[in-house]
Length: 70
Image (cartoon, rainbow, N blue to C red; front, side, top):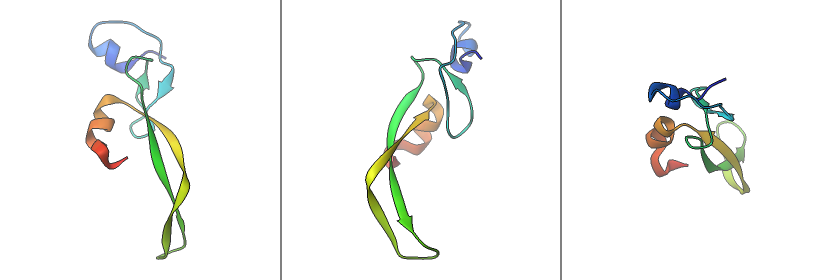
């Protein structure tokens, strides 16, 4: 698989990750790793934030869409 962002720029690089949101293949230069909070609880409530976080890989477009929410 090739990096989608690089391909749009006319370059060719091998993808090393996939965006968890949109599924875009990403090279090391375009993969963005963000720690996300883990919430636990039953439906509909109560929810509580876990002490741990989970790493996620995002493309530049999805990272920008989420902003600082992650």
